[in-house]
Amino acid sequence: MTPATTGGLRPGGFITPLPAPLALLALLALLLAVVALPRTAWAVKVLVVVNDVPITDFDVRQRMKLNEVLGMRFRSRAQARKRALQALVDEAVLEAEGKRRGIYPDDLAVENAIAGMARNMGGRDRLQAALRKKGLSMDFLRRYVRGQMIFRALAARSGRKIEARVSDAEVERRLRKILSDPRLKPITIWRLRQVTLPVDDVAPVMRQQLLIARAAEAQQIMQRYRGCGSLRKAADGIFNVKVSRTIEADPRKLPPQLKKALRKAGTKKIVGPIRAPNGIQLLAFCGTRTIRPKIPDKAKLRQQLRAALQQEKIGQQVEQFMKGLRRKAIIEWRTKRS
Picture 1 (cartoon, rainbow, N blue to C red):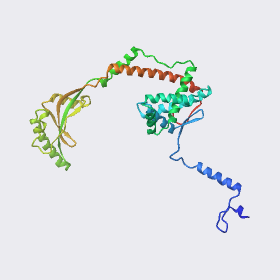
Picture 2 (picture 1 turned 60 degrees about the vertical axis):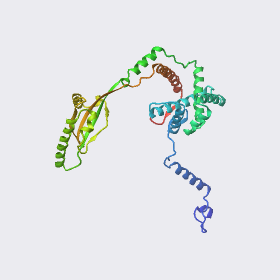
Picture 3 (picture 1 turned 90 degrees about the horizontal axis):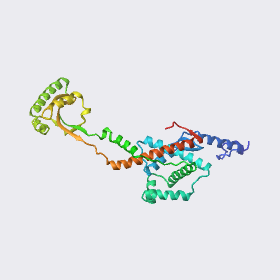
Picture 4 (picture 1 turned 45 degrees about the vertical axis):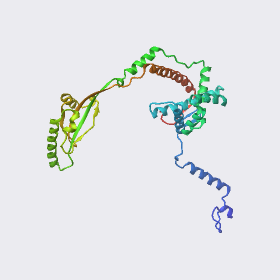
């Protein structure tokens, strides 16, 4: 056998070349080995494929960042992710439908639209800086703008007007609902102060004796007590006493028995002695305070509510229009739909 066909080491120690068929098989084996490698940290996960266009988790994260730049706010990160994913699906649907109907805004039209957005956001430099801060390029914004333009063109061709009229009665109904929120009602808070006579860690037999002694000292404080302002004076001369600052508590969350005892004691007497895990406690009722939540300016609130209701109605119309387009698209979910 000639050295060219052995595929091993020649006497001189050099590796002999493999013949063409074996070299091809070796290359194929190497490629298969690479394919079989586990997914690495940089691998992306395809969430959905729309008309053969894959949408990955990376795309969703980027859209979430773009939404932040555009000033979109959501109740939670989960909702922000859901909206971003749906927007990307709809974008792919719109591009496919636009292509089918010969609608594809040219670069100049897109740039003019971005220029208008930039003016509203303080100029193009500021817009680009906001994108860079999120690690985004202008291409992400261009794709978003192009999708919006295709949507408007498709809606116009279908004869559908995306608009919303909001009546004064609708605004007033929403206003009444907001103002009836219990969180806007005045809340009466109880002001309390706590006195603690600690008992250190000792043997069980000694602990009981110390608790009795500390309870006796607590009785002395109770006899001297003349109101919250007298607490420190009442505890004067007694070793190791801790007096808290004023604590504001919601009476609705206090145990019924404690609430009854505080009412009975009023502001001139103190409740106790109370045996606690860390020693003996006394609790003083220092009166009440009413918290009145700030009521928003009604005229300004009406304006905000009208804009919000208009957005809701427009959103419903857009969703109805997009449902029809989605039915014509091939959408394959590769993960659980969020």
